[in-house]
Length: 176
Image (tube, rainbow, N blue to C red; front, side):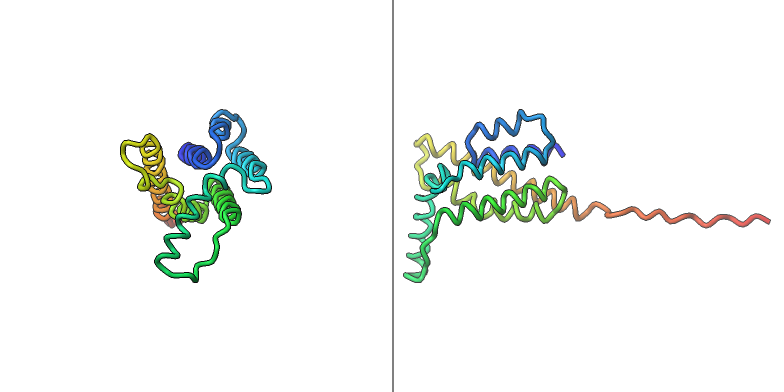
């Protein structure tokens, strides 16, 4: 269960302001309460225009849109950053809640979230090695790769663990 809490702390701190990650670490509430608290704070930071996350994500979504347009053509629809943020919050919130409850479905949702968002959010490949932002993004990218690996480990261990151990009673020896 400590792995689950650590995973959620890192996942929540990766897209939220650092104060939320610290809040999740220091709160003495039950783990499920932390998830609800972080989801509530993220929702209130969202606002009408998407908040700070939309401002940070907008240039990256525009870069992805330009890439898709160059490969596919003019048939690529306009990507709205607010819709991406809402979908991300929903997948992360639902996946995190199910993961805390021990469901492998939650782990799969979080794996999907990490698989889609990690290369877009932590685009270290757009910076030169001597730029300071490169090392920060590279470390966060590898951290998300490690979290993805931890989720794979969780799913595989969940598959290997026996559901219920059925105890069959040994037949009693007949005495005459």
